[in-house]
Every structure is written in structure tokens, then in C-alpha cells.
Image (cartoon, rainbow over all chains, first blue to last red; front, side, top):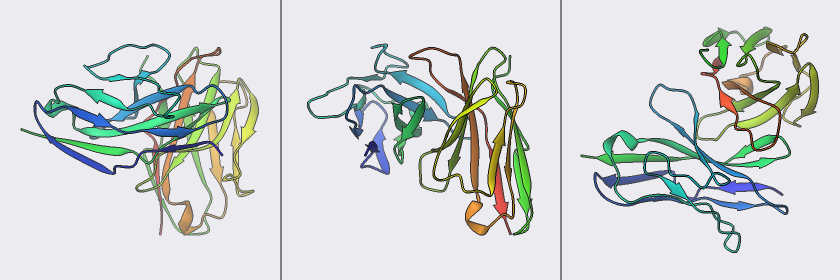
Length: 107
Length: 114
């Protein structure tokens, strides 16, 4: 079955520290993966997608098919990065989300 | 364009009542999706439309749930005979046609069943 796993419910770091939010998936086909972010009192919004291979707000994510992972990374966390992060897998036209990781960045 | 709009933002009702939510997608988007999110979970897919056609429904969508998109623009999600377990955030998203198009989400409607 298709599934997205985010093993950490909460990740706490200090400002300036590196961040890695883990995402593993199971999918038999060629995966299309996304990271969505939800800041406090805001709607869920797209952060980045693997097909674009871009860096948004300093975040990057590389698809590793061998490890079936799509971890989100940022070398130096900022306080404004504090938010809920969801990894999502696209199956046909719908998204399958992980349970999310809350990132807290302390000053 | 203000993005995907959902109404109401919050609905409180007694168990057994019917409720209806509305979603207005981004104007040029052909595809419209409904998701449900409960505490501590990510959004779970319920159903989606391409224009006015409902193309897929999740097994989560019991026969008490019905969704429509009559003119291919806004959509409604109705829950009949609400139960305590229906309490959740109901999210709507839209996207243009075509591959590799991201979904854009609304603020959601939070349903609370007393």
C-alpha cells in the first residue's frame, strides 16, 4: 500500500543549527513527492516538490529512490521556519500525506 | 485572486444534524479536492472533481457524505446525520489540469459535533 512516514512528531533546534525533517515513502510506481508547510494560523501551502529540484526559503529535498526517502534539509534554521511540515506523495491525482513534523526553532 | 475560499470557517452542530460546506476554487482551476484532517494526522483524501465530474471517492466517504460540483466551479460537501467521529477540519484544494500541478489549499472548515 502507498504510505508516507514521518517518524518525528516534533523536532526542536536552535537558530543557526542544521535541520533535517525525515520522510520515507512506499510506492510501487515512479513517485511524485512534495513538502507542504503550515505556519501558525495560516493555510497549508506548498514548500517544494521533487520534480522542480529547487531551493525554497533555503530548504532542499532530494529524492532517494534506493532508500525511498525525501528528507527536507536546511543548513541554518531560522526562527521563522517554526511550523508544521507535511510530506506528501501523489498517487493518481490525490495526495497521500504523512502525519507531519512540528519544527520548533529556538532563538 | 484570493486563492481557495471555504465557508464557513467553523461549524458547531449537534449530533444527528446535517451540515453543508462550500468551497470556491481558484478561478481557472479545473480540479477540486476535498480532504479531512483530524488532530495529530495529516490530511486524508476524500474525493475529487475534474470540472463537474466526480472522478474518485475514498472509502472514508461513507454514504452519509455527498459532494457536488454542479457547474464545475464551486463545490459543496454535505454530511448527513452527523456523528461525533465527523469532528475534523475539512480542507478543500484546487489545481489546474495537467501533470505536475501542485494543489492549493483553502483555510478549511472546522466541524465540531456536540
